[in-house]
Length: 103
Image (tube, rainbow, N blue to C red; front, side, top):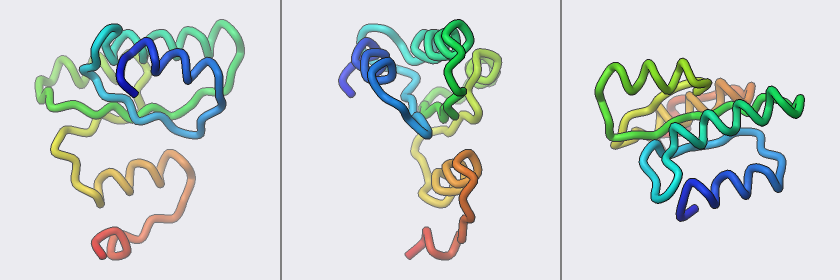
């Protein structure tokens, strides 16, 4: 997606099992997208969708803010495939085989 606005528009129009959210996007930033999704879920009674935040920001307060605002996990870039696969599998309730991700 090219912007935070597009992310919110697509979220509102569809059902997702998991969201990968970049923290820094044009327009509405990832933190506001995160807050907006969580508000919508609460206000409208929608099922909570796991949100995995992706960021190059390694500041502890940023990670804490993401978690406080409803992210399940914050992954720092560059993302390692086994780390991403394990996080996705955990939040989708899937069995993860680390050796398979390395092939």
